[in-house]
Amino acid sequence: MIFALVGIAGFIVDALVLYLFKDFLGLYISRLISFLAAVVATWVLNRQLTFRQMSSSLTKKKEFAHYLFLCSLVVL
Image (cartoon, rainbow, N blue to C red; front, side, top):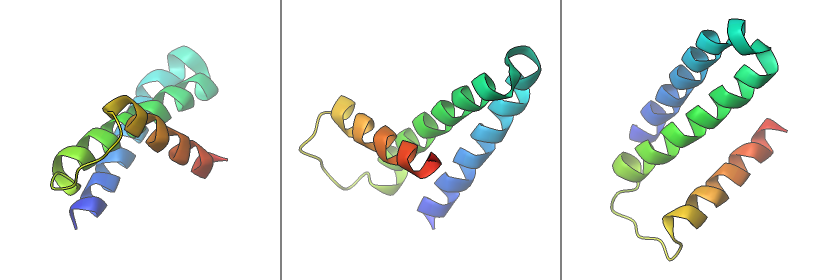
């Protein structure tokens, strides 16, 4: 349930950031910024809410890099 709520929050962050920047930066740059904002938001929320009981052998930077890479694959 929490995982789904984090996904909804990510969608809202994505849509809001895209809407806020599209008139100033154009759709492509705004989409890139909104995607990155949603990735950061969902990573932070998932770490703090969904997977807080789990530990990782990776540093936070490496963990985020893996998450960003996997999210980027979905975009393609």
